[in-house]
Image (cartoon, rainbow, N blue to C red; front, side, top):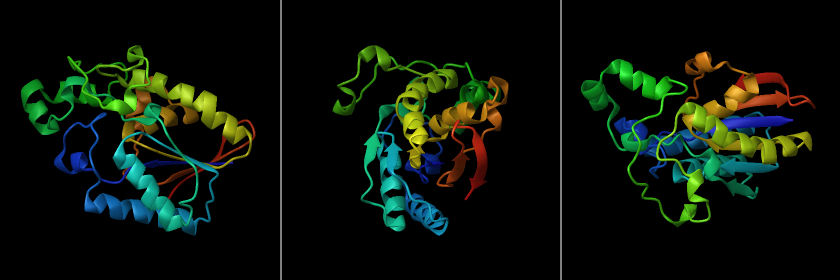
Length: 222
């Protein structure tokens, strides 16, 4: 079975270097080109999928659409789930990372970005639209550590991704740097203290071939 993880193309926030989290920002023109190129790479690998999962944020949704169109697979069912959203960066959302280094110091910013259990300063209030209205408010954090993001992702793996893979379906999962790092941690059994070694570049498909026990048989960076 094939499982391909794909981080969205360059977003406005990536370009301007600020924390995004659940903020819904668009792809840059470069990001759209990257998404199309990701689709081309997957087409050249002759990858065919049965279902696609994305977050509910438009940078991931648009990336999935552009890639699928390039692959001639735009007809595929796409499931959008909040569980694939980027890590919620709390009160840091919208703040420039370099400015935060000046204010709080490089070490603290590194902890916020890479520390497994480090929780960012919490947002006093979430200002979300109706896409989250169906969720129990207790599920929506005001700021997440990477550990909390991993726990958010796991029900998606257990309830949907793993059963479909066991049913010999090929899946494309389009998400964000930290939501895909969370999946990678589980797939590759990465220790907590090695999480900072997981790199998920923008719009680079990561192709896993899994055996019937959902163990990694092969991994290719496209």
